[in-house]
Amino acid sequence: MIYLLGSVGTLALLIFALADIISGHGDHIKNLDKMTWIFIVILVPLVGAILWFLVGREWGNTAENLGSFGDSRRAEAVGFGAPSSTEDELAALEREIAFHENQDRIRRLEAELKAKGQTASE
Image 1 (spheres, rainbow, N blue to C red):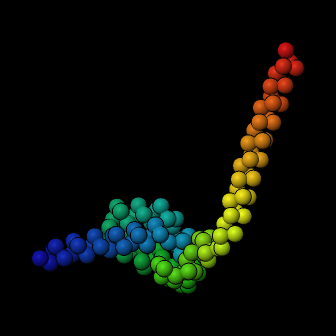
Image 2: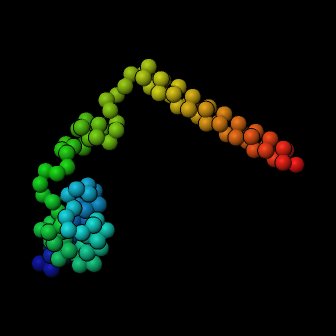
Image 3: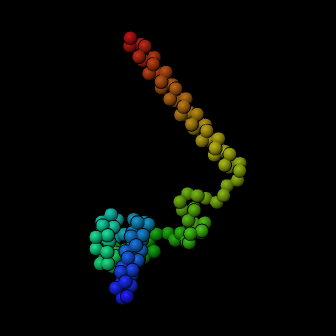
């Protein structure tokens, strides 16, 4: 029974360490890069996970506090601001449409120039 609890505990520590490494920002990783820590934790699960938490992780307040899952600060940090009005969304869509129309026009003009260049060289 104790061996089963030890195995489950080691697996839980391994998963927790890997999730912490993968989801963490680069500014809270010390001594080695992210991929090296992932390999260490996978190859030597118990020792690697303990080393990660003792030596590899920066425990200070280096990253900004993004709050819990539903906190609006998380959305703002990744670029999703507060809900905008319908007019703002329509204006953004119109800008996107205009951008794509301009890109299509540029492609057509480039094709015309290329065709004129080929006919002029013949």
